[in-house]
Length: 156
Image 1 (cartoon, one colour):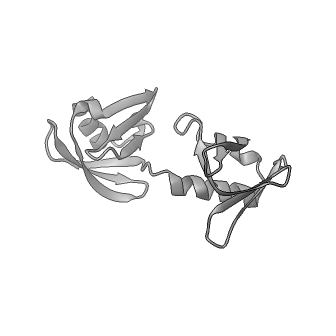
Image 2 (cartoon, rainbow, N blue to C red):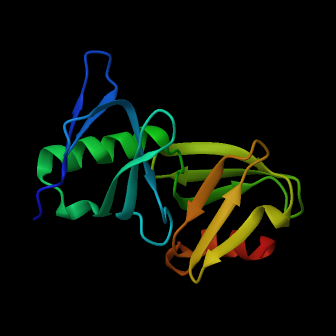
Image 3 (cartoon, helix red, strand yellow):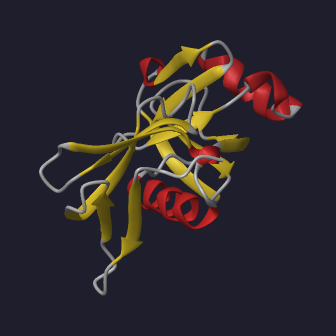
């Protein structure tokens, strides 16, 4: 495990504060993934409030635990991409249709406007966007249960 060339902590307002190797403090730091789908735990950039890169993290697991926890928490707060675990029901086999799904964040329903709102990002990775542009991830459609695969196949 490498010691990072920066120190990361939260201030009394809950904002991330990065102190770099030169001792300069940067308040309001945000964490951004370079490859959120393909390599979510690799290539993480810490940006200051003006959007300037202040630190680069090659691999999240290389950080010491307190810093790793802060970065992971910052990423979770910034990103909202539920993962679809099951398709429970669809209102119609043509679009627009209401999808009722079970995600890693609980059950929800959304409107799929058209088949073009289902995109393959990489082999075995689908991104489904609802009518409001909220992205839902399906990591491996082949590992969904039979009922979910059958419903999904109607739209692919």
